[in-house]
Structure formats: structure tokens, C-alpha cells
Amino acid sequence: MKFSSTTIPGIVVIEPQVWRDERGFFIETYNEKPFTANGITATFVQDNLSSSHRGVLRGMHAQAGPNAQGKLVRVLRGRVLDVAVDIRKASKTYGQHFSIILDAQEAKSLWIPPGFLHGFVALEDDTLFAYKVTGFYDKAGEVGVRWDDPDLGIDWPLASDELIISEKDRQLPFLKDIANPF
Ligand SMILES: Cc1cn([C@H]2C[C@H](O)[C@@H](COP(=O)(O)OP(=O)(O)O[C@H]3O[C@@H](C)C(=O)[C@@H](O)[C@H]3O)O2)c(=O)[nH]c1=O
Image (cartoon, rainbow, N blue to C red; front, side, top):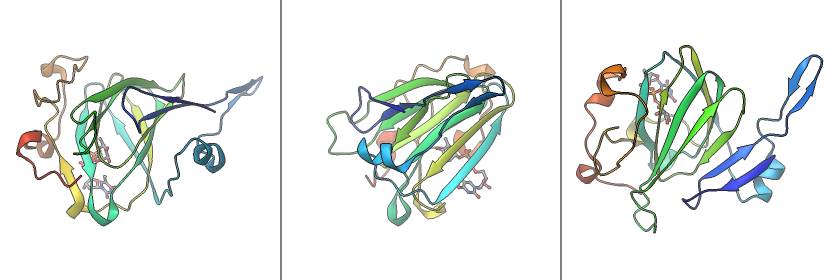
């Protein structure tokens, strides 16, 4: 496993070692030892999976409070642009975001600690997005910000008329209007 830091302290890209043979391939998707050795001392309590058509945009979401979530995200099928926005009030990179293409071929994963908004847009049909989280689902701790908030300045790769967004996500507020718990 190769761990690479990014422009935003705390966000880490993880590339697996891929073992290929005549049957296909094998990778470790999570191993506590190298994660801990690379400063990610997370305890995961829930695994999630979503399936999305091309153009589905989910975000921008965080979970705060007693069940605050760090997320280890990956794509099992298809391709996404994945985005994490730093909303840690004391952070030097507050308001900045990191984005990366995640796909099933490269099999990279992204570690997003608590204190970040997270979202992605599916770039292919039947995209399977899998993630481990460090806190149980807790509706009361949900924090959300609009995907097109100009203060986030995210350059989404699809035109807005191609996007499929839940009614809940369409109603989200701007970052400047939320009571930021981080
Ligand atoms: C996130 C979640 C949702 N649900 C339920 C609630 C709801 O009825 C249904 C769909 O939920 P949502 O619309 O919130 O799903 P979705 O928009 O896919 O939410 C996810 O978006 C990405 C970007 C993230 O980062 C995740 O943490 C999560 O917030 O699933 C759970 O039962 N457990 C969970 O952990």
C-alpha cells in the first residue's frame, strides 16, 4: 500500500499493491497496520455501498457530533470525481477542497477525516461506491452544503443539466449559512 499526502493536511490517497495472476487480481482494501503506521488510527464501525447512474451527484455531506465520521472511500465499479472540502474552522486550508478521479481500475481509495464535506459525481452508469466510516449513521449529526456553493468553487466535470441530485441535496444551504460544528 502506498500512502500519499495531498494539498490538504489530513486527506490521504491510498494505492493498493495489486497482485495479478491468471485468475485476475488481489488487493488488500484495508489493513490496520499500514494505516496506523501512516497516521490513520481510525476504528471503522459501518460499511456503506451506493450505486449511481452517470450524472448522479451526492453531496456535500459530513457527519458531526458524537458519531462524527471519517470516511475511507473507493469505487468498485465505474468512475467518479470525488471531492472533500476542509471545513475545520481552525485549519489553514479551511474552505479549500481536494478532488480526485477514483475508478475501479486503479482501485485507489481516499481517506477523509472528520471535519470535511464530502461528495462525488458518478461519471459512468452503474457506478458502485463503497466506503467505511468511523461513526454510526446519525441523522442528528448530518451537515450538508450545496454542491454548487460558489464559496466552495468546485469544478464539477459535468454540466448542471446532466446532473441527478436528490431533493434533499438540492435544498442544502451555503457554507456561509450553516452553524459549522467543526
Ligand atoms: C448515509 C446513510 C443513509 N441511510 C439511509 C437514509 C436514506 O433513507 C437513504 C439515502 O440516504 P442519503 O440520501 O443521505 O444518501 P447519500 O446522499 O448517498 O449520502 C451519502 O453521501 C455521500 C456523499 C457521503 O459522504 C455519505 O457519508 C452519505 O452522506 O439511506 C442509512 O440508512 N444509513 C446511512 O449511513
